[in-house]
Amino acid sequence: MCGIVGYIGGQQAAPLLLEGLARLEHRGYDSAGVAVLGGSSGPSLRVAKTAGRVRDLADAIPKRFAGRAGVGHTRWATHGPANDVNAHPHLDAKGEVAVVHNGIIDNAGTLRERLADLGVELVSDTDTEVVAHLVGRSEADTLEGKVSEALAQIDGTYGIAVLHAGFPDRIVVARNGSPLIIGVGEKEMHVASDLAALVRYTTTVAHLEDGEIATVTASGFTTYRQDLTPAARAATKLDLDPEAYDAGEHASFMHKEMLEQPTAAERVLRGRLDERFGTAHLGGLNMDARETRAIRRVKFLGCGSAYYVGQMGATLLEELARIPSDAEAASEFRYRNPIIEPDTLYVAVSQSGETVDTLLAVQEIRRKGGRVIGLVNVVGSAIAREVDGGIYLHAGPEVAVASTKALTTMFVAFSLLALQLGRVRDLSVADGRRLIAGLTRLPEQIESILDREEELAEVAVELSRAQSLFFVGRVRGFPVAREGAQKFKEISYRHAEAYQTSELKHGPLALISPDLPTVAIVPDDELTDRNVGALHEIAARGGPLVVITHETVDLGELDARRIDVPRNERELDPILMTIPLQMLAYRAALELGHDIDKPRNLAKSVTVE
Ligand code: F6R
Image (tube, rainbow, N blue to C red; front, side, top):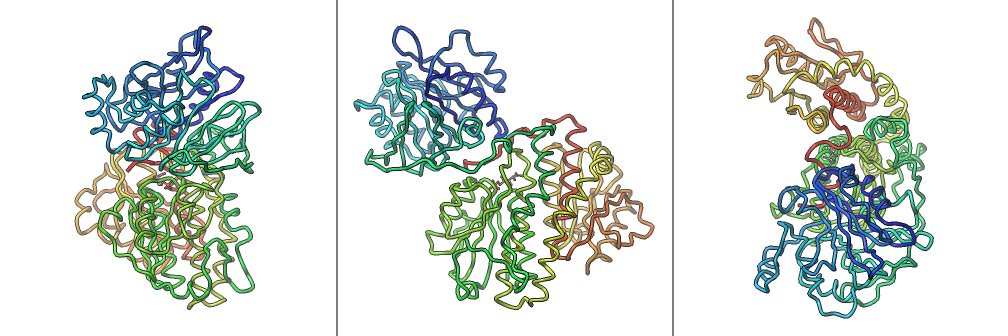
């Protein structure tokens, strides 16, 4: 999704803005632009913007582009196509105001008409341009006043940064539903929508809250509420490792992040297991034993892969804690006027903590009096702030669009939740300890799968030749198949569809042919025989098979390529079966020559509905 950067201080802004934008590239975008304030004969705006990549923008910047204050943007098209004109920054009619914006202005249509009636010529198709005109036309004396007046007319979501030639000593920023972070440097200040753009320069930051405006000058910042009443906000020093935002020796962030899974799994477990009582301690849930026992149902909400892993969590929780559980796409939930029950625990699952569909689902539940906890990776993100309690994933920054290590930590966190909820109900201490032993084995087992990259690459190359693939699994294996198909389609752009193995006969079997490989999830469990039976039906129709399974599973005479993964406790097997699927997707995409970290049409954090 769109990204914002800003700089004000003693250095030339443009190179810093370009560097910041390059660090936001992973979020997904289709055009980019910068504006700086400079000039010897009084400050004026210089703007460069272009459809395409940040490197195209760097080429498009003219030689004379001096200025020590500036804003930059990567755009992911929502209103109007990706072209030079629609790229941000957008200017007012006099060319004095430059605005970059993340989010969506819902009443842009009305505002455009109103401005047109006043004789304003709008040059772009965007919703953002109206903000520049509203700021430019405001008669307030201060830039903060102008921005405040403009925002008062806007419905929708925004993170914005505004430059004004008449106020060259400041950038004014504001937030409503789209992240905006201020980074404090030595006699210089940075602004960004994502920490990734800041960490090279500073780890002392302040997160704006929704409904706040801030003035950022070279020497500091001041925050206000939107009506300009003071809202004191201090910067805090974050314990962040800037190296975590570099791919280092890896060819892509996705590869780096897959390989980080064993340590990420260890981190989410750290300090949370209680072997003696066979349980987990999750202090952040903010629930006492009585409240925990009163839960009658658990509902997981997330989008995309976070939804699929939520489905793994629901199965796990139901098996271990014996609480009826299910998962639902957060993007659909709100639209069916859901019944919110007081004895249901809602679990919002989100790596970024900024996915707007999940955030809006959380707000809907809270509005109706429900209790929501968050499983979130990004500390201090919107969802983390909105929920009643939660579990931080401690996966470290996840940069690649295709989520890997965050999902693994989500699954591990679900296991902790299942332990804690299960142990105040039916789960025996012996079963609790069995699970803890299994969780402790997980990191090493994940590592042993990742070590087999070259073996998996051979299979991936074969799969990459197919235009269409099936991923199948049952019960615990079905969300694994869904996530496998998701990863495959996201980065290889091949059509990959997940089905319950049990559903094949009810329709999809008609598509089986030598051109359509099936990747089947077949753990050694109570469904093995049925699963293997279904695979014979596929083989009998000439369908090529790749089977993710356990060494102990007898596939008989089946003509299949098998990939054995280590066994753990049956409840934890799904995550171990997910790891080879990530690698298959990754190596297939690599074989096809795709840009792994920037899959086409996709964005890292989906901050618009
Ligand atoms: C897939 C992927 C997406 C995200 C989804 C939710 O690899 O990354 O499907 O899982 O957009 O994102 P978060 O977890 O940030 O809410």
